[in-house]
Image (cartoon, rainbow, N blue to C red; front, side, top):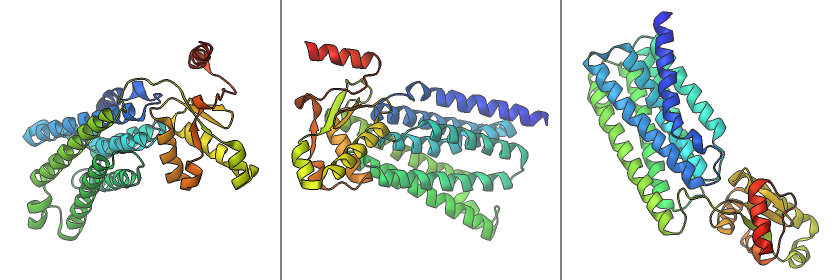
Amino acid sequence: MGPLFVFLGISVAVVAAVLVVAVPLLRSSDPSALFLRFAEAAGIAAVGASILYIAYEHGGGQPCLAVGDTCMVLVPFLLFVAVHALGGGRVLWPSVAAFVVSIGVGVVTSLVPLPGSLGVKVAVLTIASGVCAWAAARSPAEPWGPIRTIALAAGGYGVFSALRLGFAIVTGWGSPPYRIGFSFVPATVVGSVVVLAVGVAVLQLRTERSRNGQPSSRPVSGSIVVVGDWRLASAAYGADRVRALVSDLRSVGRSVDPAAADVPRGVEVSVPQAVAVLSDRLRATRGWSEDEIALLADGAATAALRTHPVGPRAWSWVRSRRT
């Protein structure tokens, strides 16, 4: 069991080092900053996996293969977390899951000889890539072009991994068809193309969001979003329905910003272009109609006040109101 603990220790250290890139921003309320940080971590894991696989092919031994598999599986999982964060989702538990699954694959590689461990890795890659593609395809984030590129790249690699596993099961891991289309060299080429496509998409997304006034990492002040004309909304939908709309608004606000706070008729969040962001989320996740979306207003124009201010942000907001 000695070598197992060595491999496990190395894998844990490598995965922890990769996640350190993203962990400092886990509590950030800026989806763009979270996305970029986790995308960077995925890129680091991809480069690390490539280096370790090359070292293994040149006699690096089992440790290189085990840690390389750990990093390889981590890539699509971290990319999934990045896309999930960009859409306003939480990232703590997906990050923990990515850590656990990637370490598990490293343990399997340490204990199970080839090609059994390779089959497990390819199966996990198929699932992880499919989940990432699904999350990107359903993401409400803008701009859609780079997100679609990520969805296509992850989905394409998921299909490649599924075909790789299928050919191995049907024809054998050492068969000529498998060696031609799915051995180390073609798998490396396909993986490199996917990483390049994702990298270009990340750069495009960062550039376009910055150009459109959506800073990628600068902290933003609190913004209040409310149901603006309460009497008109109550007359049109009834008081119970309007209260349900406010509940939806607050719930989605907390999904975008865990530190969000309730205000009369709405919520305060620390995200750029809060009305537009919450409108998109409510339309996509709660099925709000365009007429209901039109009820949303900037709370600063309606003199909305917090119902339970929290921490320094609340004090700075109150002080700004006084001045």
